Length: 308
Image (tube, rainbow, N blue to C red; front, top):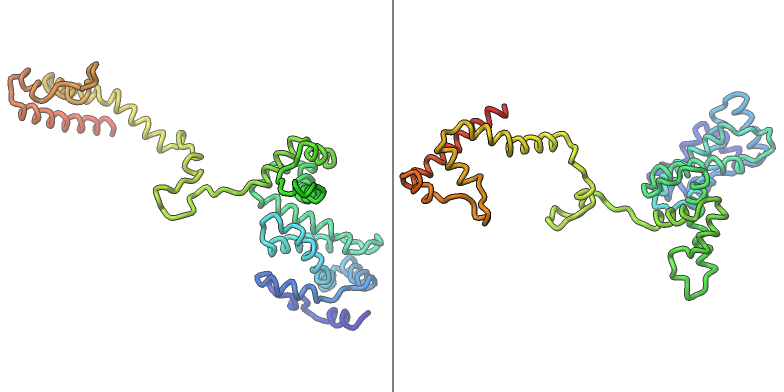
């Protein structure tokens, strides 16, 4: 057993060596300096964990492989998720691997843990990368995590005059579909999703009238309870409500209201004027206006009573 490893094993709380992920550079610097385990040390620690549930042994196994998580997590930085979060999820996978590791299988922990680390990071990306909703089958997940690197390979093989091309050609689509065992249409759809950017539903600037975001046209309030009740109330007021309110008026008042507010002639000019109604009833235009005001007040009271 080398000296550095012996010193590390004697530390009662080895996790105190590792800083918080909040300071990512310091964290990476420290885990890259943590001592590696020899095969014999790894086997001894794994047996202590398996046979005796030794938590300190588990901690040493995890600590010695934190640099592996950092290395693997770098492969997934192109998905736009925080590096610290990727490392944290990878650490969860590492701990699952350590818990299940069997030293008697003749395999080093580094080989066994890679699967668990990648699996946990994959799950995290699929849960949080909002554009990806089609990666539900094993083949589609393989497509998602391989399409980016395969596109880079196609670009490297292309002629200099074609290196600016950002989309796959039909032959490349078919090649990807064949290699990853998915339909060509799924390749095209996944490429479109991965090349597109997220769009904010809410306006991101100030409260300007020119601000316009998808929330303005994606929202459907036709079946929202309050809107439904308001629409029903408007429909009632425009039909039965008006009829009931008019029924509460005398004949003269009702005719004045109908001519002034409810009648539209063929030429779209509306009903009679105050002076025309005044001539019909033999009163002044001011008197017609007073009758109209009193009738409208009476109708409002009738509508309020009916609505209540």
